[in-house]
Length: 120
Image (cartoon, rainbow, N blue to C red):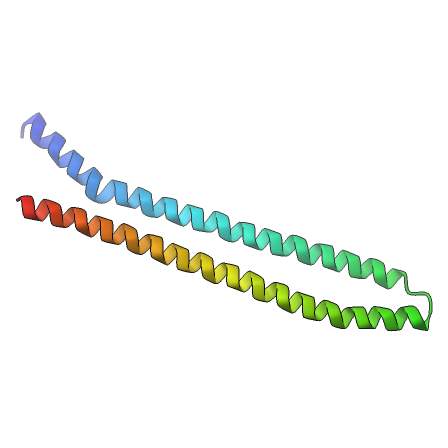
C-alpha cells in the first residue's frame, strides 16, 4: 500500500465514520445540556415556590390568614400545573429538534455515501 492509498483510506474513514460520529455526539451533548437546563430551571422555580409557601404558612396568625393561605394553595396548584405543562412543551420541542437534526445528519451522511458510490 502506498502512502497515497493509506491517506485516501484515512480520509474516507474520517468522512464516513469519524465526522458523523462526532456530529452525533455533539448533537447528543447539546441535547443533554438543554435538557439539564430545563430541569434546573424547573427545580429552581419549584424550590422558590416551596420556600414562598413555607414562609406564607409561617405568617398564618388567624382564621382569615388561614383562609387566604388555602385560597393561595388552590391558585398555586393551577400555576404549578401550567408550569409543568410549559416544561413538558419545552422537552417535546427539544426532542423534535434533536430528531430533525439527527435526520438531517443521516441524510447528509447518506448523500456522501451516494457520491462516493457513484464515483467508483
